[in-house]
Image 1: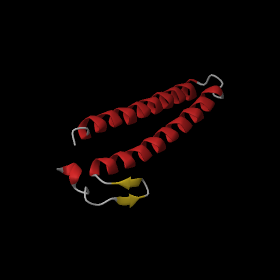
Image 2 (image 1 turned 30 degrees about the vertical axis):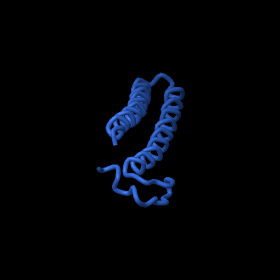
Image 3 (image 1 turned 135 degrees about the vertical axis):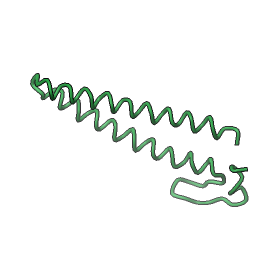
Image 4 (image 1 turned 120 degrees about the vertical axis):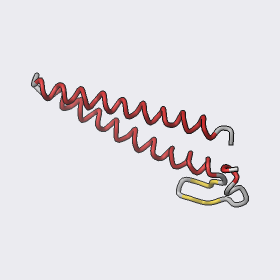
Length: 92
């Protein structure tokens, strides 16, 4: 039922042509996934630079490692959310 809301009409959006709510959600999420992973990769690069230039400072090293772990966790959460969305909307 939810998937058939826009079944009669095709809506042209910035995310492409969509005909159902699940297609619209998938299109939006693909943009969010790309943006989130890009930000996380940039943050990993910045944290790696901080780690390399810390000159052995324990605070800088632990902060950089924490940031890298949090960025990798964020990427994992984004892909886990994609898995959950795909499993929920598949039946529709």
